[in-house]
Amino acid sequence: MEIITERITVATRGNSDVVNLTDRIAAFIRAHRLQTGNVMIFVSGSTASVSTTEYEPGLIKDIPEAMDRIAPRSHRYHHDDTWHDGNGHAHVRATVLGPSLTVPFDGGELLLGTWQQIILLDFDTRPRSREVVIQAIGK
Amino acid sequence: MEIITERITVATRGNSDVVNLTDRIAAFIRAHRLQTGNVMIFVSGSTASVSTTEYEPGLIKDIPEAMDRIAPRSHRYHHDDTWHDGNGHAHVRATVLGPSLTVPFDGGELLLGTWQQIILLDFDTRPRSREVVIQAIGK
Amino acid sequence: MEIITERITVATRGNSDVVNLTDRIAAFIRAHRLQTGNVMIFVSGSTASVSTTEYEPGLIKDIPEAMDRIAPRSHRYHHDDTWHDGNGHAHVRATVLGPSLTVPFDGGELLLGTWQQIILLDFDTRPRSREVVIQAIGK
Image (cartoon, rainbow over all chains, first blue to last red; front, side, top):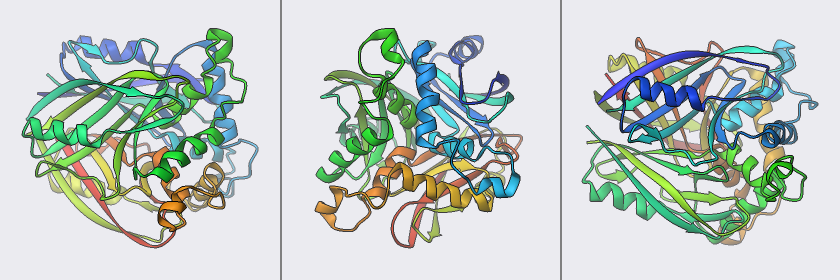
């Protein structure tokens, strides 16, 4: 059994941008010739999250809109008293969705559904360069 | 240390049905005589999630009702422009809750709270047969 | 590769108290001289969750306030018909955020962002003594 850790940088547009990471994760598994195990995807930062969705144009609009109802940008957040950076909503969203995801693989393939992609969600208010940790445990 | 992967099929009624998986997961750990480690539960699909709750009749109604306030079915979703299948709310809910959960075990027992059960939540609009991956790492 | 499991007790004030666990998790990794791997943090109980945030005074108020909009305490929950303990909102919040988190480490250090801390959120209506499982897999 092996543990392999890699850090990648992902450019986002912020503002609840949804970025499809699936191909990079699948390539990572293949490059290391892993057959069975799981891969953890973790975003280092407190205004972004990792999850899955069907990556299609409608949901890429629906998810930001839904997040704006769940934790509205227009609301007043105490966080602004500390930093005045206007991204309190981004922090709340990131805490609710969480920074990590674990996906199993077998036969060298991610065990995702056919219409299920791994996504990075960046809730911050500006384009960011995100550090994402990919860590596989398996053989 | 071993990695053991199993896929099970779980029948749901959809519409935010909450299914208790705890006994199946505990049986899986026992069947493989694992003592210490963790088990990951992952649902392959983008309209379902995995989490924990106290599995009792009140919460089994409260959770769907709460999800209908968090991401209302009645809202208009762009996802319907793509597929016209009326389940945009189900996708949003699944992204917010996430598809995977990891639970530790020790002494051959899941380290859940007394009133804490492992659940599959199916947000789709119809009964589904769900593929759930159970993967234990341990010894 | 090793698996190390430890259970710690964390005192909380309930009512969406947010407790910073980062130092304890970092100390656990150092104490066992682990270099590469990941650590899972799991709260045994169905009215608490684990996630990350920037641990600063503003967000420590924002997160409870946001959770009170997402799953209001004032709402009537069926859970109260079962137990009459007035914490239906706490259960719903815990299911949405989830009980577990996985954080990678490398070079003996947690791969968190600079302003990203590991937190326990206790949604129950009273102070609690929480059992939290910390489990590292690595070498």
